[in-house]
Length: 111
Image (cartoon, rainbow, N blue to C red):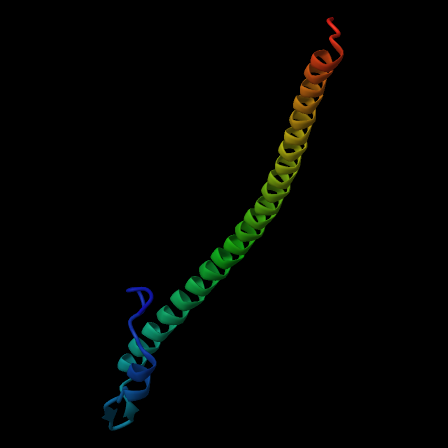
């Protein structure tokens, strides 16, 4: 079972036989059995509510984590784009330096 506090299984309830007195079933035996059923159903309801709350909390946490992943992916994409643009800028800067050096060599200009 999910919880050791639950005493009965559906088979236990189905297979339960009460001894018959001259006046019918023994009331104390029936009452004791019904008390166990009440206890089990109370525990079952409590477990169900706890698990439903846990599922709700986990779904909320999952949703928050998905939002965070989306945000981080967007930031990563922006960073990649910036890095790529910086690479192009550095490449363009390098080209301008090379052109300047070639102009100096060809035209003999000194700065």
